[in-house]
Every structure is written in C-alpha cells, then in structure tokens.
Length: 75
Image 1: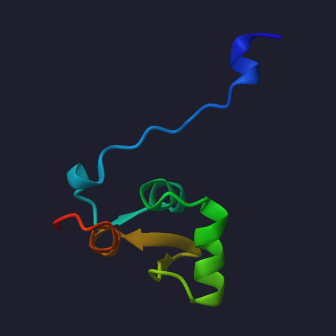
Image 2: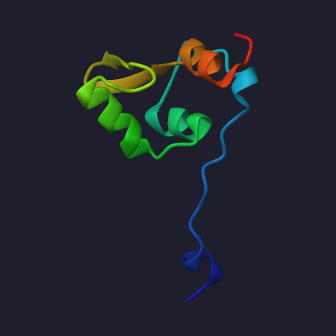
C-alpha cells in the first residue's frame, strides 16, 4: 500500500478574503467556518444554524457575505 492511500487528501480553498463569488459550496463554507460539511447540511435542514443557505436547483449555496460577517472579515 502506498503512502497516498493512507493519508486523506485535503481540499485546498482560497483565502476567504479573495473570494469574489456571491456564494460557495457546502465543502468550502464548512472549511471557512471550521465545521464539518454535515453540520452545515443539518443547519440547512433544520434552519437553525449561524447562516441560512440559498437553495439552487436542490443544491445548497452559502452566501460569502454572511460567512465574512461571522468571521469578522471585511466584505
């Protein structure tokens, strides 16, 4: 077995300050908020999280402006 098979691959996302899109994916939002993606999906399901996602064709889109407010980043 190779070393790559033993170590999980980590996603690399840009700094939140450099994100110019209006929304990000659940994986990206979870990374920025230091939560697991499933936690954000639970927030969306029960509508009781720190931020509410926008639903686009059955997918969750998390507003970058709200993430920046929570993190205290100018945005």
